[in-house]
Image (cartoon, rainbow, N blue to C red):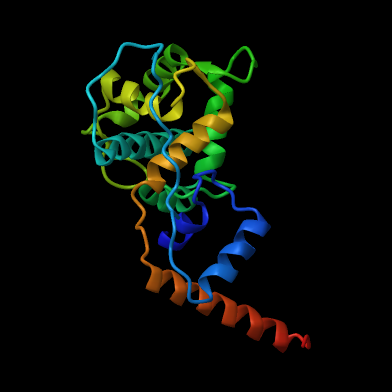
Length: 217
């Protein structure tokens, strides 16, 4: 996680080849770390919704995880997702093509009944409580393990600020996924120079070994 956080310094969920190559050239050698952390997403000066009390990153992440576990349970119950593929991502916030990211994308399409490709806060709030409410009950055992977690409207509102950092009032499917990813990214460790150099050197040595074993010089 720490290595990926350093690679994805902009929090964009994808790392292009050229950035990876620059990273490897930099950290396989003996250079200093300069500003590898992602840039701040910033707060909008004129929010479109009334402000709410600030929450810590840990609290916001707990809300996102509760929704993700509820979402996985919702799709397991409907037969769209298996317990095996949902459990790992439900607890750790990962994204594979057949589980968490697929579930959020499907959920977005269900919420976007008009097919415009955008959702308002009220639509998002309404969809969460109409579809996921049974799985947000602390007394209900979830298919992914453990029990549900109670989530309030204020919790959803705080998470929405992460999904809509510019306070536009609407989100796209890509924006929603990016916001959820960045909520998780904030919890990943920031590696120091020594550890980055160690990992980059190890990856480089493994790549060279693999190329040579295939008959390449």
